Length: 207
Image (spheres, rainbow, N blue to C red):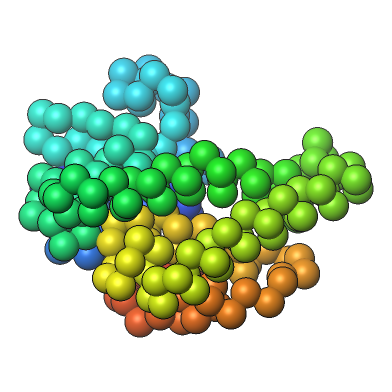
């Protein structure tokens, strides 16, 4: 059985859990990370030298990096409906997965650390204002894309890209800030909420 190491409240662990639900992959999850077993322990570092969750063990195969993990699971467990083999269709999915990791993650970092984590190192008013603006601007790119597709981020059908993007949208709506009117993003959030995997793992790690 697939072994998943990481606390369920982690957005990156939830990517893996949601993917498992979509693909009906049975798994066992162990709590590691903040508030649980330390990822700095020799046992964990032997699996991931970066000391980050999630890590999976699929038999004798160990893998870390959440986006790499979900790609592996879709390829290994018959997820062609989520992660197509055709090169151009796959590239479109990969484009949005990578955009979430590079652009969207970066845009929310200051505002999230300030407003949700309440970190004392992220309380500069000007930097927070700029962070909120950057996050809103990046979410505007997503709104434009969803207006084009009318459904999901890479096209008409739900794909692997919607898992990291959907969790990011949840983070956006759950952060206490003034949200611009992005009707396509709002409709997308409701559309995702019809999926069992999102209901289980898409709202801050709780059913």
